[in-house]
Image (cartoon, rainbow over all chains, first blue to last red; front, side):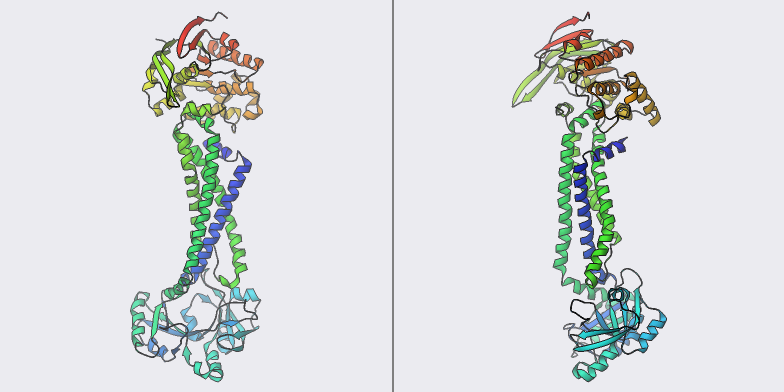
Length: 384
Length: 229
């Protein structure tokens, strides 16, 4: 009967309950969405491997490194592969079609990235076509590309129109893998550069270094940077995760603001809910006084009030969490390649549920204490 | 020994920094099976006395024994258990839970017992039949008349077979006919089930049903009348 009383009480004032529930649903949904945005921001670093290092020019990413570094890095202990990658930074049709394009040494690059899953025939076709491109599944879906389609990209760092033929479409091994990337052959870039921009040829943007033992990452990083110390292009080597986080760090203030807003939303709805519970309990003081007169303990009254508050929070949170998935999907689609990895993480759902439970508990605390410690005679008098 | 034995009971309230004595060294005995009516003008202390007897308020001084237990010595938790086991309440405004049906309202005090759900339900149905509401069990208070609601309240007061029933203006919110029916029902509880009843009332018609009438004036019992009606 306690449960029945809790549920019936929760649904007693339908308008008030409806409005409070709407508030909780919106707050939980907004919180989940904002947390998903934050998560998406860090997704690049979460999808990294501990067995990969990134070596770049110590001055800036803008500066390149000589190709000869590749062999020297490859010769170091615990290094089982080195690949060159260059950021291309082109535009597909219009500027708003942003997606990352990389010129990569395909034979060396893809063995270091087992999370990019490509069927054998497509990979073979890509490797055999100098102008071939390997694109992510979501990117291909976004622009309707199929195998054999020619994709013209206007270079901004490397001027001119570059035409690529889609030879393969890769799938991510899990949800954390970015399926919005566009890869083509570094050799094609380099050969063209030799003709069009000879001073920019035979240079590597970054080296991706594969490790046979992840625990030796720091040691190998130091060894690489020591090898090129006092050279014309000193290097900075870091784990792939640290490399990705350095991009996130540039926008960290925005992330902190997003996080803060998500918690402020919860605080506001917590205040609204606390007000609802305070009003509810104030109206029902005579009923609680009657229950106490009949012999029910203050603990029973407390359970009734906490139960009602938590019931509201659970109903609101359930709807809010359920709505987070389709809304996040729609939001992710609308954002396109801005958030290449955009999904509601299990920890976000747990945070939503935990926040709702906490809201329910905090909102009921003061009214429950008031009702539990209320003088019975005063409570009964407030009936008139 | 009387069922209720009150000796030198005093109670005062603080209002606006002023101490107002409501009961002054009051003594009273109520025998088992007695139907006592408490009358007096507003502010005379009759409701305060009823609240003290029911264990929902604490005196400042004196002793108050019900069934041999000095309830002034009980702590909050023990007092709550005592009320649940020994006191049946009938309020002026019925004080039913509006979201529960008549049957659930009557069953409510049995939640404090170890009875099974089925036993609780059977006992509640029997008690509602006893007060003539067998056909209103699934109705919520808002769907019942004032008289019917007070019958439900009486059934709730009766269900745990209390030692004592306290009634505060039980007909105060009812018309003459409904009030008469409620008084008839209370008289039956007293006569047929030998329930001891202490009732506060302003209504002379209600007072006629009591065996003994006690008048309070400024916190002091002034006289005792045996009711011949």
